[in-house]
Image 1 (cartoon, rainbow, N blue to C red):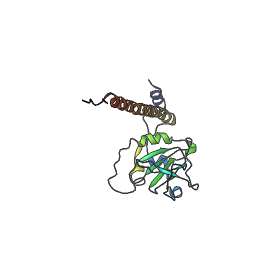
Image 2: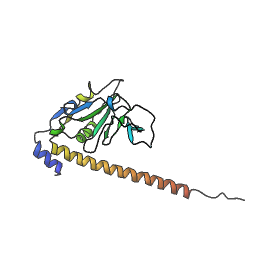
Image 3: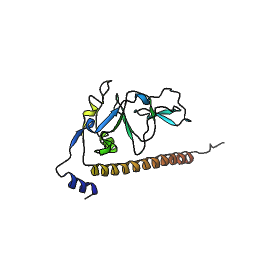
Image 4: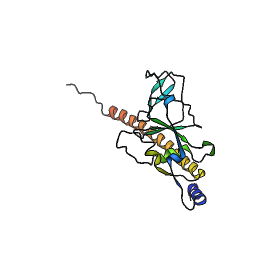
Length: 195
């Protein structure tokens, strides 16, 4: 049996409680963290984020109203229209008021880990069918399993280690593709025969 199996057997032999996201997650409107200027420059140090695929739109030199996120005090940015989201553990500003800033309720009680909630949100399969704000009316109503904290911690530890391995494999694959292309081009380059 794995450590996780042991914890489940010990701490929740009768099953796991399911709770709505809104019961464990607080949200904040990002109004005060909105970037004022869209003149971005890679020489600036504060990233401007979007919850979409682009994630980092650019960098700003604005010094006021920066969201202060850290590894110890992270946040999930959630796009209210598309429901895409990202884990953020560094200081930032945002581009759009459509973003919700998600944190764990009752942080001092540590009733749930934000990283655990982040991973469970990845298992919510919801395709928005209309252009509307989804957090309050729909997404926050989804139920997630909420086991005791030691089980959440072990699940996060396991998933984070796989995430790290996946990143290493992707980097290795990228290098191998470059190596392949180099040798393919070198091996298939022939001098033209002149008569």
